[in-house]
Image 1 (cartoon, one colour):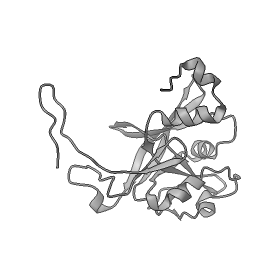
Image 2 (spheres, helix red, strand yellow):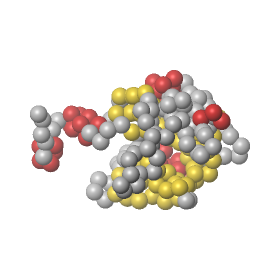
Image 3 (spheres, helix red, strand yellow):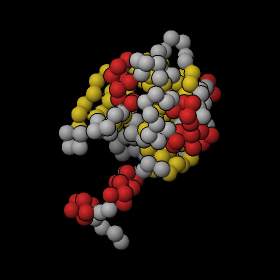
Image 4 (cartoon, helix red, strand yellow):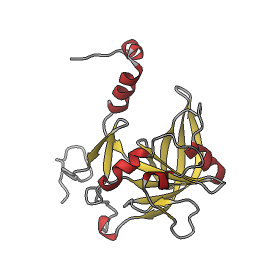
Length: 211
């Protein structure tokens, strides 16, 4: 049975270590983040680090890697203050994965990767037309994580678009029906399948299944 302490991990071959640490925490949501430069070039990049930060106000965040190289998503958000988060489904997961390639700044990943750039109402940056959950956000703040110089980017939800049949009267979203994908590490994709939904947990009471 493999065991690693901190020193062992540090001594691992680079790509072995990247694969191990990226996957060890389990599956994460797969999302495409859309932005636009001040020159009018749209940008799209896949992220596996989108997280819920709060419901009042409604906030989502994601982790930006260190700015040692040009990060188009980061610079676009800082320039115009808006971005979109778009759910990856099985139908587009290969195109979504391709957005991780290092395209030049003057190339739109929408066009290069075969995805459709779409604008909804007056929101200033593009959504992915093929995505079944589309979220428009305004940039709120960034927080440097000093331990490794990554950045937590925080956005306020300004707009949500999803199919009528995917949400019930209590606000619960059927991710399985939406074909939402999960990603393990940086390169392995999984289909979402619900195995149970349960009521609010209370001390001394049995877990109650919700149909």
